[in-house]
Amino acid sequence: MSDRIQEQYERLGISRSIYEYGAKIERELSERFLEIDRIAEFNQLKVIRAMQVHRVSAECFNGSSGYGYNDIGRETLERVYAECFCGEDALVRPQITCGTHALALALMSNLRPGDELLSPVGKPYDTLEEVIGIRPSRGSLAEYGVTYRQVDLLPDGSFDYEQIRKALNDRTKLVTIQRSKGYATRKTLSVARIGELISFIKGIRPDVLCMVDNCYGEFVEEREPLEVGADMIVGSLIKNPGGGLAPAGGYIAGKRECVENAACRLTSPGLGKEVGASLGIMQSFYQGLFLAPTVVAGALKGAVFAANLYERLGFEVIPDGSESRHDIIQAVSFHDPDALIAFCEGIQSAAPVDSYVTPEPWAMPGYDSDVIMAAGAFVQGSSIELSADGPLKPPYAVYFQGGLTWYHAKLGILKSLQKLHERELVNMDLL
Ligand SMILES: *Cc1c(COP(=O)(O)O)cnc(C)c1O
Image (cartoon, rainbow, N blue to C red; front, side, top):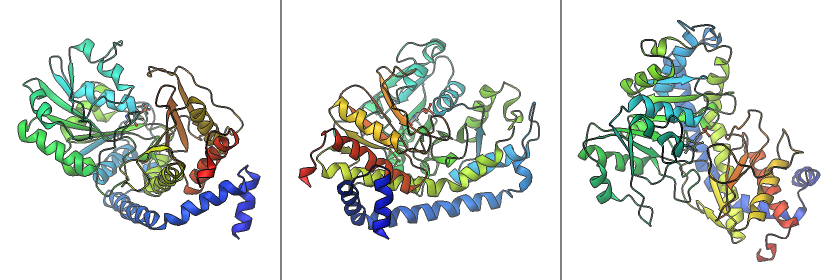
């Protein structure tokens, strides 16, 4: 049987030596994979229970049009999300166009002129720089008179409690905590560490709102940030919780007050959550959430596999091969633009969609350097599907994530290594 599998890989361009190297790494990971499966099992049950408690029925899949009044599918889904993530309420909408939009919405609706926003975990995700106004931008929070303060993590990655205490002042209204590392090379925060940070902040200022950018973190652990004191979590449906099926959308879950504020900004003051046609996409939201725990498990296996595969070849990987996981992103620093590009070409060539195109670096809106992106996705830009991207600037790190199935993630990673090998950008003699 394994010979026949190897033959399939060969037909997809994977040489025997690369395949065998991958097989050896995979054999060593059986314990880790088992642990990932256990978390998926836990989260699968959590999702099913939430759907049962809120009596999801076939009627929920009927979309609404126009104003979308009394949309039982939309209302039930928002209760299911709230239940699943342990919030009082949730806003889950196709009208939230992406993760950045969801975060901008949460911030702009919960902050008022004169308030201050604090990030105690360093620089936020690139696209938020324009939302906040760190880089001047039309319509930023800065233009509305919301100021921003940032406390960087200490060199060892720990929280700078002393500076955080000093940064909290009378105007601090909201603290934003990014769970995932994004395009930084710091470590992703575990839910437990997020809990410690929130306890510290609430110990000084109990009334300050703690928001967590939950992108890429959903279902990676058994607990989510609302369970450790966060007031609001925010994410994208074309990442983890959409399970690869949601064609668009974002969510905000947490305190009723925070969610209501967001709804009044997304739609309009006075209308709030009452409007918003769900059109015909409710079934994909439900079914995607249902599949999300196992999809996330497949993506996690891919990330752990890539870490071990590249670490063994002498590359710097974050997280390293043996670390526990708190998001689905794997970074590999190549310190070489050609290697970054070869990696992305490998991922692209493994895709079910657009496998024949060659990714090229380009100036993407929202980012301050050229970015190369590889994705052959069913949903445009979906990064729960196998995808890789990296800014063309030192340390030439690729950020790799997703894979709707572990097998596809594995093929993509082997293809990336194959490309590096063919261009003599990797020293396989080390093995
Ligand atoms: C992806 C991501 C975002 C932005 O989401 P988009 O859907 O790309 O706009 C924000 N924060 C983090 C940590 C992310 O991973």
